[in-house]
Length: 512
Ligand SMILES: [Zn+2]
Image (cartoon, rainbow, N blue to C red; front, side):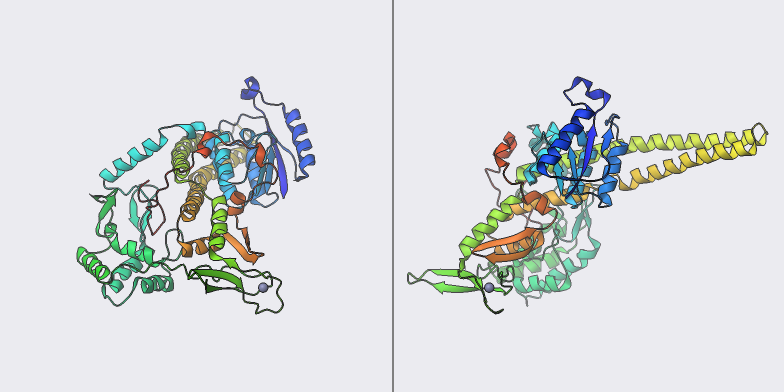
């Protein structure tokens, strides 16, 4: 890991107990030596105020990291690194994209877990997380939305959340396939499992990019959203979204569902095949054994098809599931906290948009002034008040500024909010892990484990794998320092009342 050192002190900091730049640097170097951190590049020192976006050194650091010259930042405290939510969001987005692999602060114990990320956000100056009625406000907003005919949750399969209008649009790519799913199932010739396999074949995936399970097929086929209605907390509302299916087709599908009876439950049998390998590189197989008592057990073991193997023990499925749940816990974020983070991200988005609007307005104003300047300069030149050289030199200067402004405007207008969607997605995946952990959906667990990790090995009755980025950042804590961490209250109040009801197509709760 390569770290960049970043120190900052501004005039506004005089009242606060912030170390001088010299002291910050001395402390950071000592810390780096102690922790054996590899420091690269120049040391970045900022003395300007950080209130307005556009700190040059900060931008330079991000650039260095974008260009893979470094993948870690060492700073005195998170508040040195990011002073507003936009900067904080940029950092977290880079963590999310795997560009930043580590953040170290001598004064702030940062654990690279979802909790750690969350605390980092707080340290980045977003103490509003603690507002008690946040959840109530979110709920109120949702009720308002639903009364207005707008779906407040994630869009069902075949639809998209429109971030601009906040409404639900048709997903043109998936729409045709969803319609077809209804039509095919209405023939009565297929089981839910076959429809699930069909979805896989035609490439129809859930909003989180997973294959659609038989259960999810059923939820989709039963969702009245497709005929233009919405069911929220048991109550039916009229939606403003475009229906995909006619009432007639929908009713026919309901009849077929009824005839075919209850869907098959996903069997526990050998749910985790094709997930793990043995250290000897042979595949892991499973078998069922019946104890004299009549109880059935499933065991996982090496197939021993690649020559000599040192693994002697079998692993019982229950034990494997326990281990998997522990792994999932490492990357879980409770629904309550997810709501908070999402609500905060939403607020940040609004704020960022407002700020961007003002900045762009100012830049455009300056651009207009520059146009006038250019005209005046030409007038002066034509009146032969200044020489050709002088004219060229001045014009050059003004034009350079003009280009600079145009580029800045483009940047703000295009790239301003690019970190938001990935940040949201990441948070939702962490929450999905939490839900999965509390479920018995072993097929989904397998899929999720494959998505978040690689190189799954069953060694000495232990499931071992490496977390992929950015999940590694969330899952792998720094060793030996766990005792020094005190969580804020919000972490001790984990989801005490899990809400098992969730939307099958996106795994989000049907009732937030
Ligand atoms: Zn083996």
